[in-house]
Length: 401
Image (cartoon, rainbow, N blue to C red; front, side, top):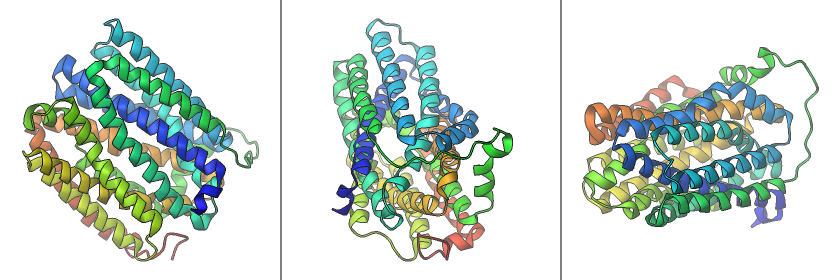
């Protein structure tokens, strides 16, 4: 494969693989531990909210830092910091200190670190491969991450049988490996010309996105579609109270979207979407919403797992198109700040989506929350097709039509 010749990209790929597996294992352990402690859908949602808020508050600072300093080193430092938080969870869980307040506080810590990690990771691939290879590289990178997401939750669910401290200890080891690999990423870093830090320089990414309808539409589509359609935070409830499976079932459910995403990303690595990319993206979001609705209505474990797998496949097509489009339409000097804003949108669709799911579940119940969210994703896809006709009619990824 031509991508294997790019050594720094392969180090990036390995680091992302290891870090994603650790993060997914930690999310499984945190969610199950919180639900064991409180039995509350609201508290499951709060875990997501506590991870999202730091990204929102630090978006301007994080984007400036990523554009100013070496992105591989920023990612390495972030992995070290998450490893230290994992070790703190080992100590707290083994000594009986882990309660609701501590888990929420550590979730804030994880969110603070990821506020810098996410934009640094997003802005790296475009520096490690030539532009014509970027869509293939994004799909290959996503394939590795989805493989980690499959293995992470399943492994985390099985290991949790031995106790939460064991899961967090394995996470710390994987994060140390990711830090070492990120530290080996090399590219020609060109520091930006020194200029006074002002609100104008910090907010340049927001202005850039506001004046690029295709970029704005692609980023905001993810925010609203996945924000409404996310069911991840409620999986412990579905596993325990609706499908009646244990931690092993929870791990398999969390891995199901990644199975579909992995198969799709492998296909996209071999056969990238080159024509009618706008139509393909909106169709993929519609598939995601329909599959999410099917999951919410299912009471059969096999059908629930299959629906989640299909939702992951649809989401992956959308992710590869959106991320490639945003990176190719953004100059390198702006990628950190644009990626920071994009990270907030992704965080809103994931962590804030978890909070939304938990809050709606407390009102309508878990089934009602997921079904309404899936229908909302379909509605967003239809509305965005009307609001962003240029994005809907976009034919190619590289450069505006």
